[in-house]
Length: 419
Image (cartoon, rainbow, N blue to C red; front, side, top):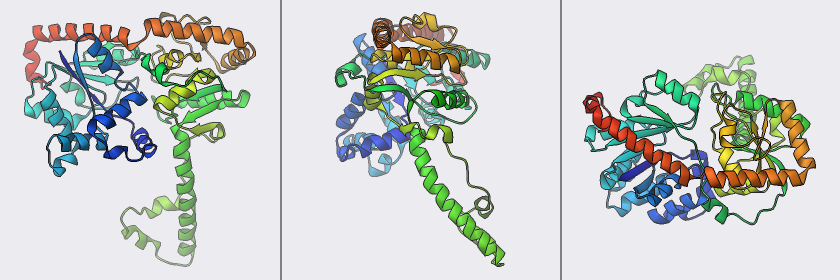
């Protein structure tokens, strides 16, 4: 069976990745793709690598990584005009590979419409979403939507979407790419603080309390964004003050509104809020991704986890398996299903409140032998039960059952799905 995964990477990560590897954008398609996959960001090639091991012909398309896509288009004889169009390139890649199953890791509605208009023979169209459900009309194009979060699956089903739950996993190849383990960092957290409903409002509150009681090193792209915000706010404040002075002199400052992109009314207001809590800023460091992130996790004596606001009941995020997979001692928020994944207090540590989290972190720091035993036990569990080699067997069953169900209900073909 031919399987194609359409992946959308974090733009911040893409820019950082190329910045740290000067000249990579000039390399061949295969060289650039191999560099990204080796770095292990997100799910990288973890799913497709595991699928190949059980007999699938599987490929990955990095839809929004322009240098990789441009290299593919040039190497396959397409014009420079096509090279500038992400949708056209992806469409040509789909045509060339001719997948039976296509798995989107984002809801690219325009690309989906293009595929439909081409009447490509795809037997099963899939999409993956996290715990926060995007507001989109793209569901109509999918036969199946997968999510790590049971809450999301239940919500999607209420919307009439065919949805299934499948957990993230860990790829043991990551450990072969890391330096020898050296627990040089006490307590870490790696992740974002998106200040919006469904995302990390509760996480921000928790860490504001935690950072007053224990020393946590937070590695977050919010830190990098906050530096940019600081510069913008200084400039904005200067411009705002200048406009106020001009207004007092009677100068008609509305003439500046004729300049494209200038909103005089907005500039006269107070400067915008930062994308990061001022309480957390002193505990923050630049965001780490891919192998850098795994290296920090492996170097941590204790690493913290807290799910997004959209996952109030079930444990599901990637950090559960990434942290334990590299051998870090994980302290995570308690969830209803946590004991189905790990044994609390033996393989991981759980908490239900800020106070309990602080108490347990301090205990772990004062009991290095017990901490190491928990970390080792958690790693053994992940390497035994939670690798992509295990997950892909579940995925294979979901795909085969969905194909059978689709065959029985072929009359749905008029609904606009990708077949």
